[in-house]
Image 1 (tube, chains in turn red, cyan):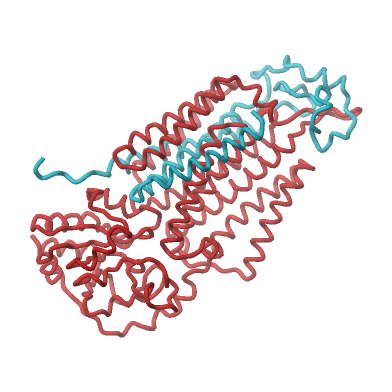
Image 2 (cartoon, one colour):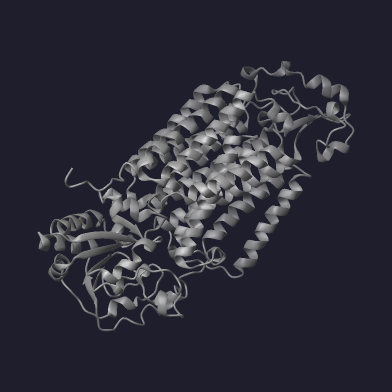
Amino acid sequence: MAEAAAAQPTWVLLAYLIAGVCFILALRGLSNPESSRRGNLTGVLGMTIAVVTTLATHPIASIAEIIGAMVVGGGVGLVTARKIQMTAMPQLVAAFHSLVGLAAVLVGTAAYLNPEAFGIAVRVTPIASPSFVSIFPQSRIEMGLGVAIGAITFSGSVIAFLKLNGNMSGKPILLPLRHVINLGTLLAILLLIAYFTQDQAPLIFGLIAALSFAIGFLLIIPIGGADMPVVISMLNSYSGWAAAAMGFTLHNTAMVITGALVGSSGAILSYIMCRAMNRSFISVIAGGFGAVASAGEAAAIDRPYKRGSAEDAAFLMSQAEQVIIVPGYGMAVAQAQHAVREMADLLKAKGVTVKYAIHPVAGRMPGHMNVLLAEANVPYDEVFELEDINSEFAQTDVAYVIGANDVTNPAAKNDKSSPIYGMPVLDVEKARTCLFVKRSMGGVGYAGIDNELFYRDNTMMLLGDAKKMTEEIVKALG
Amino acid sequence: MDFISILSIFVLACFVGYYVVWSVTPALHTPLMSVTNAISSVIVVGALIAAASLQAPPDGPPVYPTHPRPCLTSQGRPVDAYSDIPIDCDAELGAGTPAAAKPENSPRGWSHWLGLIAVALASINIFGGFAVTQRMLSMYKKRERKDG
């Protein structure tokens, strides 16, 4: 609204614009690990500018309470950030997303209850009746959208958090007629937002919020554990759009720019994750992946396979020229990353070239494996992405697969009936020997499908806990 | 700033975001998510406005100067769906005086408390998000050269 923004002096508009630019630079810094740390500090600077500008330009009668809220929140945030295990990053990010969503709902509700404070309403005094506050119709749409997206982000992230944290089964929960219910609810929300411009009754506002909370919940429960990297990226995107919608309501450029950045970031990550699983975004959202395949779990267990010991593995690897380590989420669960790095160090001391190959969906969020390896002091220039290293397996003596399963499954290349058919996978079977660390032969991967690789001639199964097995190899090498 | 200006900023920022995010190395996708998380908490701006806000009673004088008043912009776009209701212009012109803006005497409404909660939530995200990103980024190290 021109009138509302006109109340802000030029320097305020400039300050918010600078904050927005700082956020762009923060993301730009992430193109390289070297520049990333400075980028992050630029982001902190941008946030400081935004907060200080806001505090400086609004009459504030309750600064002590506000600072109190910031100290409490900031303290919780800092302690969490320090204590959190790197394996638990996906849960943490999901929890953080839910907070952005909830904050958006609260801000939207506050703006609805007290629109004059946000400069988005007029007082109307009809003849012979009490005056009332009328929110600009355009602001009502922006507010409605902001609250709706915020609520979806919140309830969706809560479900994602519960699934990732193991409080809720990763299995998809499939309601009958769920597509009809979901589409109907989404349509109802849009119609309510349209009607909201005609009638700003609390009932309409409440219905928009309530239905949005419900749809966030309904959208995520049918999505299986294997698709969580997509979900978490998607929720990242939503939290951005929620911030952008609020930015439109408040005519705040910093919020609009940030919302657009975060929104596109999440969307791109979702796209990368979908591509890495050869799944369309629509099919992920529709959910249900993994439900059918798990039925065949018991089928293929009694096939012959070659089993090896830690000593065999140590011998094979110490004789090799090049070893490629393929880590997956199982490595993180077993906390084996430090043992893996020790093993790599010993091999390097023996003159073996060691590289790491990472599939985009190894781990439970984009880039998760890279963080876990970095935590174990693996230099980032030894870690390679799928497209960069896949051609090297053919010239590699040993592929050491630890905690990864589905991302190495050759069925993705040659079994049209497999649910993961067409997904790009790491060609570990092309290495002279493939060492596959696995707890037992019984279990199946996260996607719930059997892996052809276990029964190949050049595969040696190392059955046992990933950490113990690697430690034993370390002992045998030393 | 009018709607079109903000929309332009938004659309251009989407393109900037698109190119900037594609240039992020895949190894840093997790820090990317945590830092985008932190910066999307810029919503704290809205939370601060709400937390600082004061609620005027609906029938009392406004706390905030209310502009534009419908009577003054009658030839502009319709202010509201209710704009066909005949408006008491004398009351309008009298009520909008900023003289009523005495923040410390005005009551605090729900929006103040909701705003405070939102400030706390967003602060968790801002401090936690930036801190955890910094913690992750500090772990990324290059290979040590043996010949040093």
